[in-house]
Length: 204
Image (cartoon, rainbow, N blue to C red; front, side, top):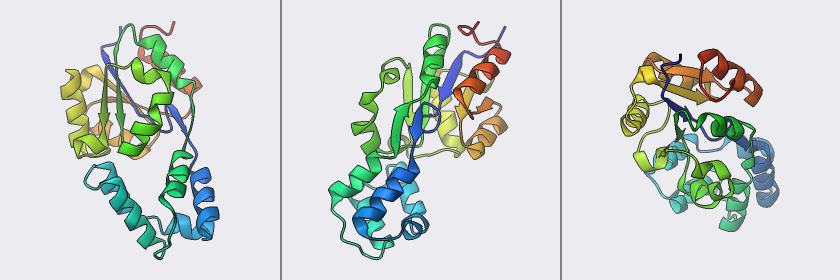
């Protein structure tokens, strides 16, 4: 019988489809910049600060404009592109529903206030989870150990009782170093197979 009591799901790429090409395409079309510039000039370190909640949306938008050469893009176009990043709910949500009666289920995501405020209410599984750990509210982001420790503390779970599911190998590696059981997500079908091998209830 599995010792796992608590399952932490990542959001983008695990429960929700991510469509970065749609975001890049929209920004390129609206700005007149080529795709390579939009992709290669993205202010990644500033974005990480945005995900940690250290800067607000308007500040991040200004820094993005500066990184693109000071382009004057309307904020509405920027947010349309930003919203295009998130696509449909993946079949993983069905797995979440199956295991929920037998385990604590939490979300553990690097995300930002805009996506949580405007995008996530569309998806049913948000009302099924026991708790949510979002980077922009906590000041830490995966793979920083602090956010994993915080998640387990909030859920009342030890590393031995915890399972973490993420599509980013670097996040999986860090969780594993901390003694957490991990699954590197590749597809809902593979995830269900791996959860059955771990003996999680609700999947027989």
